[in-house]
Image (cartoon, rainbow over all chains, first blue to last red; front, top):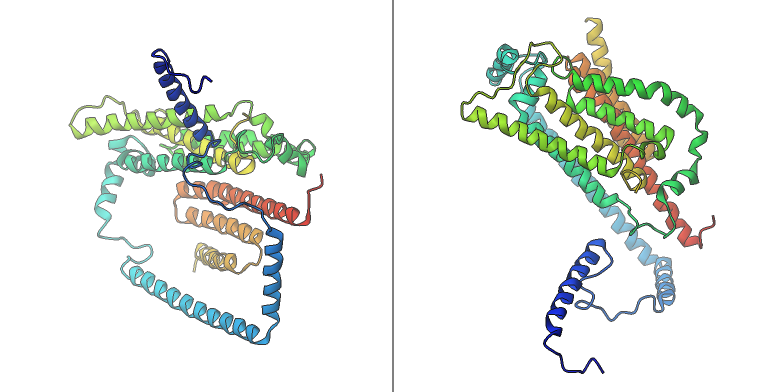
Length: 336
Length: 94
């Protein structure tokens, strides 16, 4: 009765609000994957699973009938032979072309161990004035985090994007687990091997993990003085986290490494890198003094912005590496 | 010919052998392991070419983390294969 009742004036704004709410609800549902926005727009009349068995059987019968005939067999054999012949010819031609192009390019390179006169102008500047201009004893760190810092900024954003893409593809939350009761972290690990009995992994891990972390932190903090820096130190620390998780189970790492922490660390590091480098670019381009002390070359606190930028890059890399491992292994970062 | 040159030649030959071997193996697990060996050899070569920065990164990323990710991908592929086989043969028993 209420359906056909004349609508009163007071009813209208209410309906508007409810319409808005339903739109929001639908959007949230669509975001969660519960709701198909094309469900009333694009529909097919095909009823699924109708006579599927019969169709399959008839197809299999026709196939077996066809493949038992001699002329069909000969035809298939001829087609396969010609396909393989064409494949090998195309493969050889493309390989020869690629080898030719590469050899042609190589002939323009300088000889192994000889100087390349066309590119030594920049190299000479880096070697002679690198320590003075960047404050870093390690010329490579001065190059990648001071002269070419924009490249490294792009690289760390590429890593972040890769982590986001892997998360989109592989992350399993409550909505897309295979069954309702499947807790991925327990079944996946306990079904195949009981991790609490892996005494060899645990013994080796107890000795290795602290030293790996110490080495990673050393490499990370010493980037401006010796070999290493943000990327390698972060990768070593990420590897240490991976060994930790595979030896002691994800329950131990979930206590401190959650998805929220990973997100916060990645965002803060990338934002800090962008703002710090933006400041340096702004002052450098406008001929201003950037007030960042370079320190004495060789000390830990030297190299101006290189040490903080190294730490930012290293944290992003460590989070990304462990995030990859965790997402590949069980479809989630942290236990939520 | 100095000792270092001989070592270098041996490593470069091993590098080429590994690069061809990855293509010629029948199973994917062997290919992954040979790929990790390739990265380890490349790491020593970076040290010989006096770029320890690259050597550390190659050892951590090439021989370590990318190998682990390849192995995990293989495991995921086998899980899916097993699931398909289970679905063909009937309900899964646990």
